[in-house]
Every structure is written in C-alpha cells, then in structure tokens.
Length: 130
Image 1 (cartoon, helix red, strand yellow):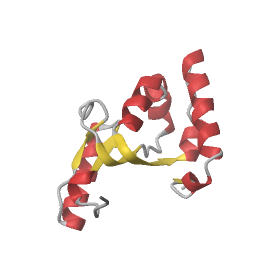
Image 2 (cartoon, rainbow, N blue to C red; image 1 turned 90 degrees about the vertical axis):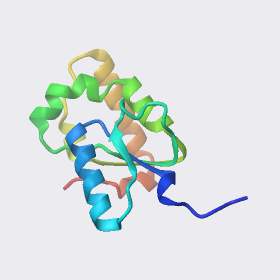
Image 3 (spheres, helix red, strand yellow; image 1 turned 60 degrees about the vertical axis):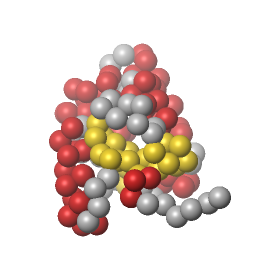
C-alpha cells in the first residue's frame, strides 16, 4: 500500500565530500531533519526510495582535472542505482558542456549523458545554465 514519503526515504549524494557535507548541514538547518547524505562511493549499497544527486560544480578547471572520474560510467551507475523509485539530479549544464574529458571513454560517456539530459524534458529545469 502506498504511504507518504518521510525523511528517511531520501538520500542526498554528491561526488564531492565538501559539497555533501554542506548540503547535509543546510538541510538540517533549513528543514530540521537529518537526511542520509554523503559521497557517492561512501553510500554505495545504501539505497533509498528517492535519491537527490548534487553534481553542481562551476569551476571548469576543477571539472577538467577530474573529468575522467566525473564521467566514469561506474560513478554514474552507483549514483542512479541507489534510487529505488526516483533519482533527482541537479547540475550545471554549462559547466558540463565546457568540461573536456581526455580519454575516449570519458568523451563517449559525456556525449551519452548530454544526449540523455537533452532528450528528457522533465530534467531540463534542474539543469540550469547559471
């Protein structure tokens, strides 16, 4: 039987430890709830009905330095597979467009992700260019 969602049904992931910590702190202050929050790898194996993935990064130099890791298929697989019902992804499409992976695998996976994001209208509002 369906039931309302509760705080324990949510998980907030980020590939970046500092960002995960800041999101957790802000959620506690703003909502008064503690949510399962952490890095993608730290929370491997800990699924929730709703996963919010915070992939926001605006420093292109940083993204370029970490592009191979950021566009690794296993990183995205772990992110998406934590969600049992819904995965909400926040990010900056402009930063994603300007990120330059150096390997064929990274370039290929980036192209696949951009195609997926561009062809999913329900994702458009989360992928802002500012």
